[in-house]
Structures are given as structure tokens and as C-alpha cells.
Length: 53
Image 1 (cartoon, rainbow, N blue to C red):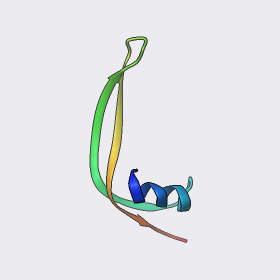
Image 2: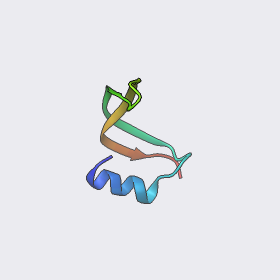
Image 3: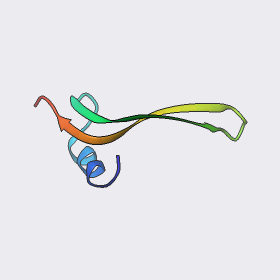
């Protein structure tokens, strides 16, 4: 998360909190120093809704 969304996540969310996220699923790859290829899947969050209590 970036910007204001990152501030909200940092201040109000922790493991186990329920959220609904609207965004785009992005996959990228990179190579480690050892030459291994790694894959990362990220959600580029456009909207975040905190659920529950």
C-alpha cells in the first residue's frame, strides 16, 4: 500500500482483521543474487473497506 492507504493499513489493521479490497492483481518476477527466479503476486489496491468490528 502507498500514500494514505498505507497510513490507514499501518494504523488500523493487523493480522486477522477482515477487509475487502478492490484493485488489480499483478504478478512479477525477479532474480535473486544466487540466480534463482522468484515470482511475486501483489494486489494494487484502489479501494479498501474494513469489515467486522
